[in-house]
Length: 536
Image (cartoon, rainbow, N blue to C red; front, side, top):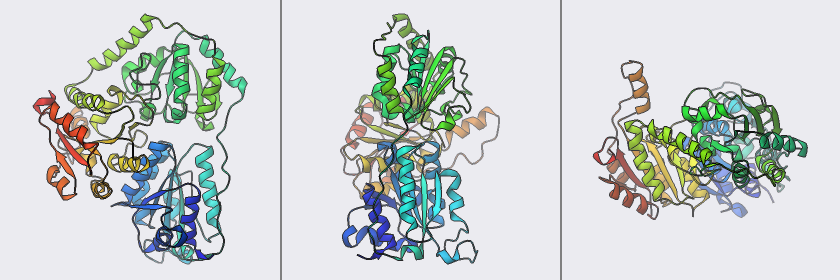
């Protein structure tokens, strides 16, 4: 059976288990579009039309955040690649398995600077710094090898994004064989003696602490058990929220972003850090100070001895390592004193006491959402002040339910992330939490959500612009510049985009709007204005 290379590429994606791709078709992707709609391929992979390639990339990111599985964006060459590059960088920073497949100008023009359509003389160099690998297929036979490389990275190592470019003439070349996926390798596991050494350190500790990040989501059950067996305090990054439920008596949630949490971390004599970079972006309160013995468990060997060198470094996927550690700790049961629990409660109360008037308004809305959403609900957040507050005040009880772009701190991800998550998990409730400034970055994706009848509450915190930067300028006595642009009429905007809109005037109206939005036939914008009387 003969098909074009573009058709064969889509067929191979389906054989790797890909069911959806996000993108915008163009003249340079027509043969791949043929693969989405024609012949035996028809319907095997569903194409979701975004309104900008940035949105397509963020949708693929949302798919990966929600499931841990590969999210795929399919875009044109040139502007398609540069538009989607922010999502690639976010996935790189947060270790998410995203595959970008793009077109490229004809192979005989590459690198020559002839001024052909969508020309970037070396397109792969645009994405090389923000991917595990970026490559151009110069012939059809390159594609199965590149796909095997990408999916092997996703399955066996730190799951950073990959980019495969296919020139327009290569897409049109005939393929006479059926490309098959390769058998994928598993993730690394560690020797038993390393786990035994970790168990010995932890059981001899007087003040053990467990720090978890996004790389630990597959080991949530084991980590909860280990926390209780050791009587250890658990602290998470924003990506690790819910691995140990944030309102568990031993949990300080994402307290590493607060000074009060730093004090607890500094006082620990043995720290087990699982699947976390311990990076600057995990803290809003300056550099971490780690004084105790550090045990690091990470799939990436480069993390073992970087900014915080480990006394004991274990290169392993979190799930098998934590299963082995739980077994090694069997029989050890720490009696958790009421004093210990009281100390944790005291730290939580101290954090609550530091909330400023605006954060208290945030917290009122956040707690209403928490009280009227299931534990399975995914909250897809943008880089905005209400999400900053929620990172340490809003309890998550399940992993992969708090989306926050901590690593790259981009704007505009929240809505398209939610679309990707809802496409991946249609039965799971998904809500958007976004500031008015960040919402405008990818606002046109409302049309995409409406087109697919997605029940998404989109909670917009309206504070008149880029409030965090306003505050930073005010603190440093800098005259405000470029941070106070006007907003659209969000209710009229929602109507124009075939969505519902509500502007609640009290808590009961907010609860009614928020709850109803999960069962609507399209998105609902719920606009909350900072400073409204009912928030005070």
